[in-house]
Each structure stands twice: as C-alpha cells, then as structure tokens.
Image (cartoon, rainbow, N blue to C red):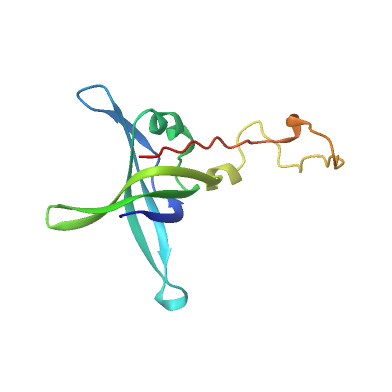
Length: 138
C-alpha cells in the first residue's frame, strides 16, 4: 500500500488543465520541511488531483497557504532530474496564504470588534468557515 500524508506550504497557485476527454486535472507544488535546526531541508512535491474536486478547490490553493494532503507517492524523471510526485486523494486547507496577511486596498488594518461569546447556542452565522470534507474510497 502506498499512502503518504504531508503538511506544507503551497509553492505555486493551483492550475487546472483538461485532458483530451475533457476531464479536469489540477496541479500545484508543495514545500514540506524535513529535519530541524541546521539540518532542516525542504522537500518539494509536485501534487496532482484528478477530477471535479480539484477544479472546485483550485481557487483556494494559493501560494503561501498551508495545506495537508494524502495520496500516492511517486517519482518521474525529466531532463535528467528526478521529481517527487503525489497523486492526491485528500486535501485539507489548513490556513490562509501570506497574501491574506497583507492589507488590500479598501481594507482597514483596525482590529475587528470583539463579540461576546455565546455558549450553548447554535448560531451558524458565527462560523466564519465551515470546511467541506469529502472522502473517496476505492
């Protein structure tokens, strides 16, 4: 069984292409830190997600964002170099990109007003982001 899980930073925005049959294929690069201290290195993965899920999630996979992925590890050779590939089965969006930290025109740097905590209520409006998880089993 070849199943690997990684957490890392997105190296480039996701790009969706289509096969000759019209099926979407979404790809991006992921930087994963290996080791610690002076021996810390970065492992680069070429990630690919086939199907409609990749096309739908592509707009959220932006450079600098934190991402968790699970899938099948592989390798390919091109012009004498070996590239590590990951055929992605599951994607977890773990954090915003560094772009989100920068100010955008028309957006204030003032902190958001504090809201009172309401315990015991079921108010869905308080949830800023509800992740959609979808698992596919082979």
